[in-house]
Every structure is written in C-alpha cells, then in structure tokens.
Length: 99
Image (cartoon, rainbow, N blue to C red; front, side, top):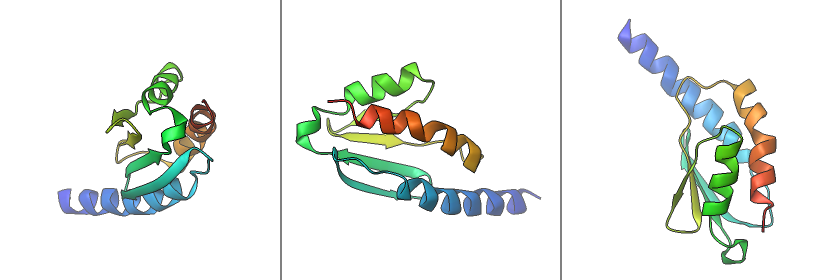
C-alpha cells in the first residue's frame, strides 16, 4: 500500500510541478527552475530582492522562502491539488509585480 501511495505522490508532484512552473510570468523573473514541486524563482536584481515578495505572500497565507537574496523557493506539500495552485497564482503574480 505504501508503495502505491508513494507512486501517486511522485506522479502528482511531477504533473503539478510542470504546471506550476509554466505559470510564472513577470518582468521581474530572471529564471524559473525546479524538479517536481520544488521550485526556485530567480528574480532580476532590479526586483529589489526576494524578501518583500515572500513577506507579501505570507500575508496571503502562502509560505515561500527567500534564498540567496534573489531567489524565492516554493515547496508546497506533495498532496497539493491544481485548484489550490490556481488559488495561489493570483497572489504570487501580485507579489512578483511588487517593486
């Protein structure tokens, strides 16, 4: 049973990770990279760092981590569904537009 659950989680992470990666679009983004649901969004230096975006996301109930000053790391739970990602995307988009 555990093997089946693990396979379902891996398949979900791969499928939704590709979907999530494709949704990032902002003039402030230099590069988006990831594997599965572990996603790093590197911001252009002109964006002013990742901390303000992470703090704005936190106020909307979305946890993200600033790493290396210009990178936002997303690591949602493996059981996340597309509807939850779609709920979060407008908030993420708004946070990435912040100067």
